[in-house]
Image (tube, rainbow, N blue to C red; front, side):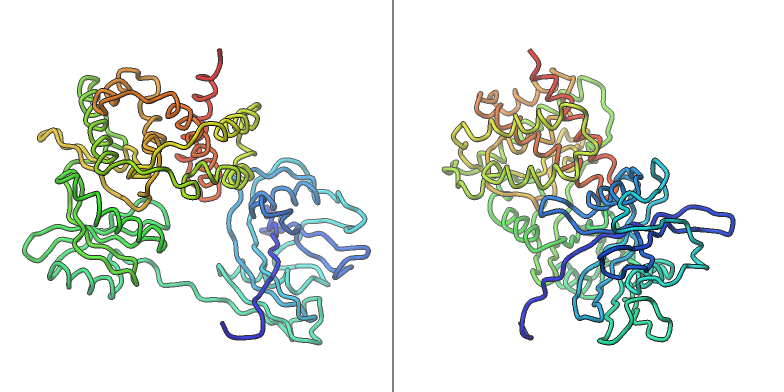
Length: 465
């Protein structure tokens, strides 16, 4: 590290509430008043996070309600622009601006001791004086930028002044290509030879980067870039250690490049079970094979004593509070009480032995070849040692309402869950549901949100006498 000290900038959130007015788009602004910074200047509804458990979206929703009286649903919040700002006095901060087009209620001054006016203004006729920081965020938003720097100099006015506009837009990367970057392509071809065709088969999420590569002589592989070093190391470790014991049921690691976080994998057969429709008898057959595959994963090696610092339950309280902040607006009455009561049960029983687990064992990562009667499993980036029931958390949603499918899985697995495993399965399922609702809401993934809500409803029903 160079320089004198680390940056410790606070983070604040800004509401760009927009509506269609008589002269085009209008933005909601409030005028600061009283003993506050930039009193008399117009500004967006904004504020700081309340503490380490409040995320950015939750803070925006809260500030909108407290300052203007409007109720914003988190699902209606859209990322606008992030601005790294430094005031004329030298204080720096990170401002995250969010655009919102839907809300409930009529905006009005709710905190008259710090705000004396509020109104709608055309983007082409913004009022003066306006806080320069706020104007920088609005100008960056209108320019379509996602990130900007606004470092003012000593002596600059707090209010916006066109003659000393310090806004600098940060360019965005080029649009994603249907093929990986040159370095990844070179790495893949060094591993398998000349590649004639690339097909982007990434999941519809920003962090998913997977391509199917067809060789010049007809071979087929998958090239994957992990979103972080942790996922890369987990998948590589699994593919080098216990996954080969699954034989043809899993891909083989051809090559790995830690600097690029890239791997080349052999292709497996079948079609994903995610969204697949089969007759009941065939479904039972598939789920019996799923149980057998789970058994093969968990008992490739002798179980180990649990490591208290690595078990998910050991970090339950921290994880729960972090995810609850984002999930609370979407929970049904009684859900939070049920979630906390279930989490308390985790402190009693001794942790279970640790075995290799897939970590994301669900239909999306399972492929079925009907002609061969073969099941395949992919995507080991969440693999780690843990209780065996960890791999049934997301899978349990697939057999909900189908006791025959649950029985088929247990028959294939070779044994039922113990009472201790049943307890941990419930606890882990609750935590996974809450995290799914929180993450899905923040990242626009409705399937994750719905699965989490469905899981909570199912578990609450099962707990009733």
